[in-house]
Length: 156
Image 1 (cartoon, rainbow, N blue to C red):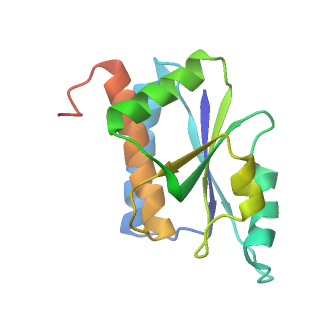
Image 2: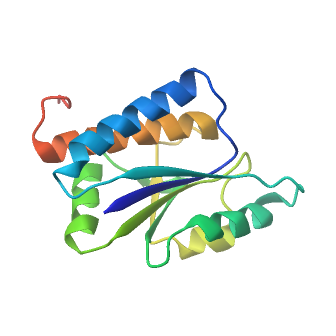
């Protein structure tokens, strides 16, 4: 199952980009044997200032047809890392070819796109900067693949 991180905004070179690239490389290596990956980041930018609605249109263009849509949303489900790993495995085992993980901009995800999501995931009640959310999500993808592979990376 291919994984697509579809995010508003461009992540510039720097420590966040380095961490994102590192965790996605680890995910690709670990997930390959498990039928997970590759992971790709699709960045969109609303240069005209159209707000969440314009961002939703841009995000919709990079979501693969037929993909499971998972919105990263503070109102979403809070999961443990093993639960997230199980969910990832369930989507893969159901024959879903693509997973689109949506990260909105500063104002979040447009309600119309959020309503279309098959699943809503939260990193807790705190709001995280959308650039850090990418890094956290990429680490959780790697952790999920490690859990599914039986690797000792995740400890309880």
